[in-house]
Image 1 (cartoon, rainbow, N blue to C red):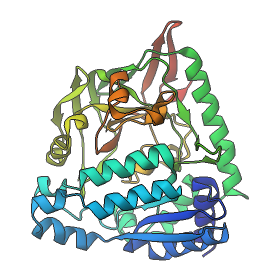
Image 2 (cartoon, rainbow, N blue to C red):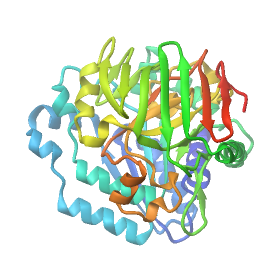
Image 3 (spheres, one colour):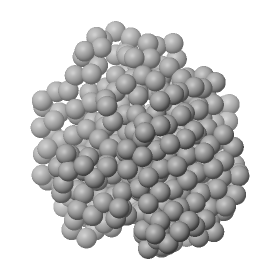
Length: 398
């Protein structure tokens, strides 16, 4: 029980950093019940005024995909949109527990129906969370996730790996994360000083050049909300990232980790990009769900994130493929197609969608990270001061 309590403490203190009197929404799955209870208890202990759990359930989701109409799977509801607006007005904190209880939940399902979701609700929630709320997303161990990783439902073994990745083995895990956040923030500041106009990733099967927006900011470790309260959007996090110019991406990438997407596992994903858009998709398995998601909206085929992670990452050092994007994306360099981060440009949170798009930020209801890093990856950046090496053979050298 101690590790669950330590987990909950990190989520509440280092992650979302709940303030006395604040409301909290907790998005979680029925498979995370014990962990969710601990997070709720920790939130109230930190002074939360109220905590509202918002539950999901895998088998119920499968029933909807199999039997509900495509129209109803995609429809947004007025009451849900109003609730999101009220959360923003009240300044709630948002916690999400991830960890697929069954990564193969939608095997055999229609890929179009499996990829369907209420896009307007998702865009509204993303907009409010990214611009007005403090949030954190954390992986929650469960037997189904353990079975996907180890071939057996050994939750204790998964907890050991997650504890290492989340620094739960430190005397004060929340303090350990603040120290790691400071290191990542220093890397971001160094990248900002270079005023890079593009980054290039070169590795086995990957040669991708992505343009950057003038004045964009690199973020590492955490963020600070409008009231000056620091928080960490993802735990664990080992990345430094920014949002690129959606109109400028050329080359090919080979994804180096399996991708859990729409209830399926995608293996051996390969993409070609031209003119800032994904123009070709191939994979050893699961290409159909990727293609279906890329049809979600016009922005789904363009990049919303470029990220830098080196082999010093705790997740990378475990040598484990977690089959969970939150963890695997922090084991190596990655990019994401879909929505950009408004905070990547100065004043972006206060801009209209049209103003952001004019700068080059991307708008989409999806945001899917894919890992392209690992052994052999080299990343260079180009700007007014020339071309510099950032990562060489998976080691940070800047």
